[in-house]
Length: 632
Image (cartoon, rainbow, N blue to C red; front, side, top):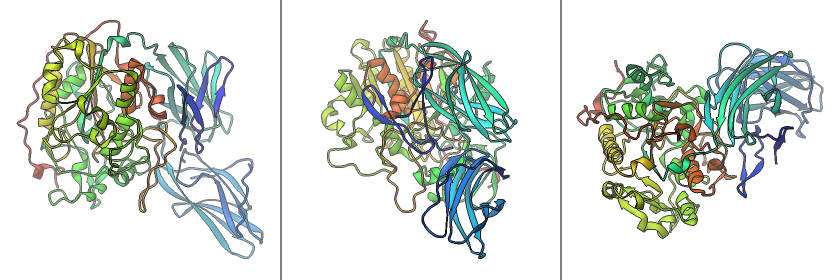
């Protein structure tokens, strides 16, 4: 176990770079993931132990490890084994020499630019022989860092956020000298400290109430600098006002693709632009190397793209977030062969209902899909808090996947639930849960009468997307038809007797291969099961989320016009259900997830009678031949 205890009784679960220590939550044994952090000048440091290997000759690189994510400046430590005296060690980055020393060992720091790099440590001996070791690394900051020297950027929680335990606290540093340690303090008391350049911890001992935390960095030169973050740890008071938690998950839309212009819309309505929206000046390159900027789609339907494991990891490109168009080749197109459609976005002229709904109620610009792959892996997390190793749509065994689902946990706790479906596109039959609970499935047509009987409405409701009916908003389908269907479902709830005690959460299962400019978040690995990689698959893990997604939290109890900037994924929906109905966690991921209390103000139902919402048009131009970027 890797608990760091401090004198005031607070403690943190620190996510280490490589090891995955276990910790207990609610009697279950879960596993913390590796913290992978990156980083061209050399800064010699005092030698530390790096035991050489047994192969003669050889270079042993102790840090960084293969496929590490690192901070900059990046610590490089290496030793050599050779029957002849080693006269020189060199460091190459992407085949360019950046550092050398006349010694048989090295312990230094180098600078790395954003993205993936090949790091080579090469040795020369007295005979003129050379030998080397190659290490692949990514210099991927945990979020976009300030360019100002000697600054700390706090990635999550958002400013003045309300959060639940454990509090996921992530920060990165910008310093020309390597940061040697980071501390978290409250009122001068050290809550946590570590010898690291990037802070990624789960604070578990904070009392309910307000806290002002100070993060202090100390670098190699002894300089210190700080940042503060005020937050409120929820007591979950008032959560029992929610008698019905309803979640509806549509298909394949990134935040930038749908809500990238939501900030501008908010301004037009008299609210602040506090949305991290699509950067219109971003430059992406298509498959032919031509520059493309994000552009407004001129069609409400466009061809598909690929969000599978390899394409998603290539899209991220070590944090550059610039390969979306190039990966479009995975889905052939004669209309848009160079993939420019990946940079398209929609706005309030296309989706007026969603834009107004997100403005009047609550949303977030830091809600992510749970895993870096396509639909099925993410929907596994939605139901089970894990994909138990799966990264592609594998065929379930006879009788369905036996991994416990949230529905199984609800059954065991005696909590009522229902699963509404639109058509034959029902996912639950792929799980053994279905064999026991098929009777809890109902056609969506029943929804409109069921919500009129609040006393008999189940506590938890999942609404399946209408894929075969073309209502799931998936690329290839008319987004306005899907949005109009969602509007009909939500509009029926608001005037119903069930509205005062309900929350309706609308989101999407993954980004669909569509551009988003924000690097995925770090997260707790759900379990000890590694990704089921096949030959040719890119390396990756389950300690990072997928891309940002649109989300709207609709309830009379939400904070009106609210925008959260705190990291969450689907498992926060599971956590909300678990906390509200006293249901045990499924995995380490949902056990450590935030419970979404930030979206609510239970002092009064502000939106018991919400403002009128605009109709969602369905007459937009649906013509895939118009999907290309302007000028293509």
